[in-house]
Length: 90
Image 1: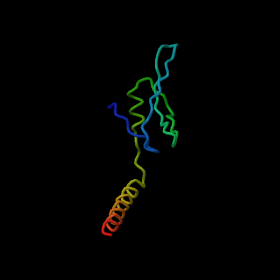
Image 2: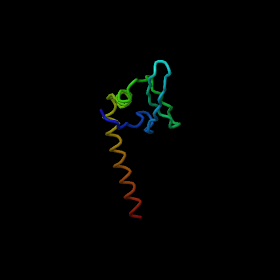
Image 3: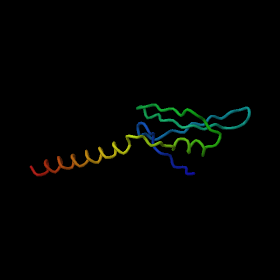
Image 4: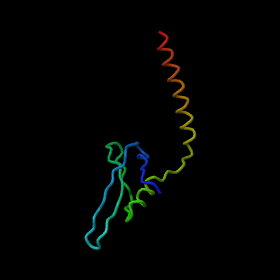
């Protein structure tokens, strides 16, 4: 387990901690959310242990299109570099 938090999987913003302190019984509940103003991704669960909240937030699943998206981003970067090189030669 690590205390490092991954960015929001939807918009890339840094997550925000929320801690609810309960009076009876005396305990805390922890959850994370993205309050970046872009996606407002709320955590659907709260956890008694801070580490459990971190582990749940950091879970990412593989999507069938992930490899295709990565390849297209590489191709786009290559095209943008070529266009930049063309503009630099003028």
